[in-house]
Image 1: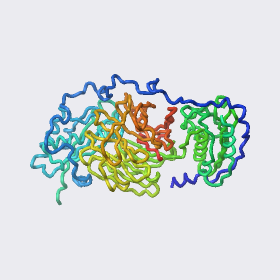
Image 2: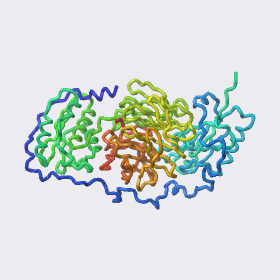
Image 3: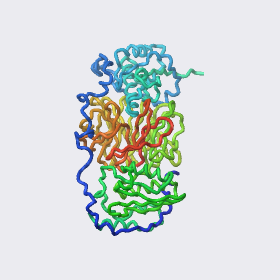
Image 4: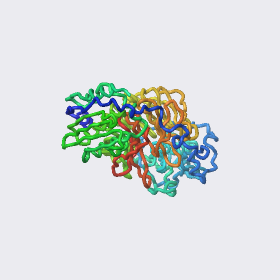
Length: 220
Length: 392
């Protein structure tokens, strides 16, 4: 509709007589030929990034106090199942299950700024979830891990980071023995903060992975 | 300078055209205005004679085009004219030679459209392809929910495209700007939708477990690139624009984000953390090894957008706050532009729309003239405005 409007917007254009054309002659000297003066030269004032404190990533700098002594990812490989196991079902299939966001609300996994690695301090929370999922009473239940970010990243980066957080939790569960077909992921990026504030206290609560327990609907 | 060229320009403008202004715009050879106006600098220009919305719209457009509004005595280009209820007349004169570079009248459409059309012609006569009649799409976040909006490039005439009261993300134009592709959580999980703007018809084109997001359409409108996590990692995938023929293009170790296409559709640029920090990579559209794009001086790069002329890749970096940068498409020295994030090129490969942050991280959109770094703000819709995509 609008496209059509714009295309046809100028239905009519009118002739204007052009004024004086021939008087360009004398003033040629005012027309300055432009040389190669482009934007600021590389390394010039403001044109190119200043070396930022030795080229360290701002991520690390911004979070000096929170470096955790966890082992690097993948330094302790568990042979089976392989990391990055495909996510089994389409999202719609767990949409039919009952969602319980309360049962493991105390087990929310928190992350450092711009990180998707599981901190040592958070491992016990996931161990508890794994133990529950492996228990006989829970065999029909599944788990949705929701990954979230604070608002400081760019949006699509955050959407990816939230998914990487959820995948990291999922992988931890899988390595702990939970079947990969029982754990789903979903990223909300920064769209669903736990705390709407704009300070580190809020941000640290928002960098998280939430556990949403999925239960089959009871038969009627 | 070339006197004959001046004559030619003046004469060629004296055409009568009764049809659309598209015909008008194709005046025969115009003199090389790049000899008069340095395309990398602000052009001092004066505007007089217009009133109301035509006046404000025209001035805004010309500033976006890299002109600086000055008094007539300081101007190197004089725009004069007048507007009535249904007509806008404008003239552009080079004051030294007193050469008329342009003389046009517009009727029909709205006052804003007449002003935009005049601005486009003025900028074209100054050597800069105008984009004042193009549109953008973006996300408007009102807290719990967000919707996709479509608006004129300056934010006027905005209309809500989605009405799901859900979460949306990452709009991208396709099918010759007749459709938008975007991420929506309206069915629960994030899926990628196509949305025909005229008919409102929607279809899910990527519905997989995990994350489906960051749709990017090729210029010919045939292929879609996207980020999926269904195989346990975030990687770049391609498909036809209806979602068929899905193919995994990257196999990253840590993950990929924000793909964009080269204009010829042969390559995809995206960001990945595989090297430790987020950096830009290239991969052939058909797959194969990923190659790091050299961004000298920058160690953190996200959200690339490939210029329509193929020459330049624009991206976001983080140094304290976010900053827009460009790098040649073959890699090399980075040029820092202005604070901002998530940029999208205009069809002229010169203007950019991007996201900025105000108080409390609230987001709004601005326009950047890349060579001169002049910034003008897009009219804001109530709520956070972000993730702009320029129809091109």
